[in-house]
Length: 203
Image (tube, rainbow, N blue to C red; front, side):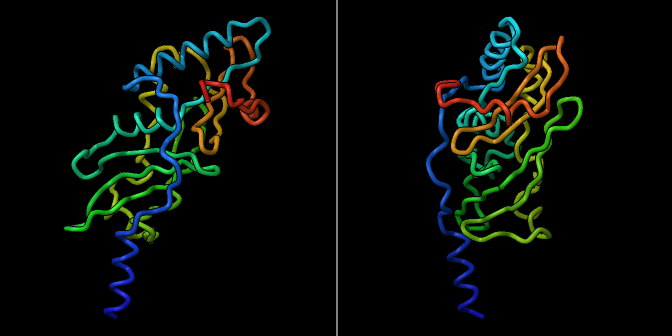
């Protein structure tokens, strides 16, 4: 039993393998600044003659800024970072369990609902290298599925004027958001059919 407790302690306090630091660019130090920058890009693209839609990349750095701005407890969760891995966003933060310093990582999948609302689903919560069972997650991170909100970004005046029609996690880069012109019908498959090039948003 003691050996098992020691193994668990080592795993909880181990540094998880999250890969490289969040990639740029940094489009502003606040949700409003990021929304203004990305909104201007969307409007420029939609203004092109015959443009069926527009796509922008919310970089990992920008997502990290949004997560930090939405942090309900900066004393409990520090150094928030968001990484795009596979089809998920990984939100990590420094935290503590009693006297133990740990890294908490929430692995989220995103879903776009009618009306342009983005919701997140917490697929896994890790402390160090240890996955936490579902029934214990709320004791570790009471935010649950609300660990990352994009409401502050999408409520930015310039982005809210366009119609969000698709989203797609771009591994190691961030989150692609696709918009359509109010004059055209929505195309939920626009993001998949129009993958962002490495040059988009300074990628």
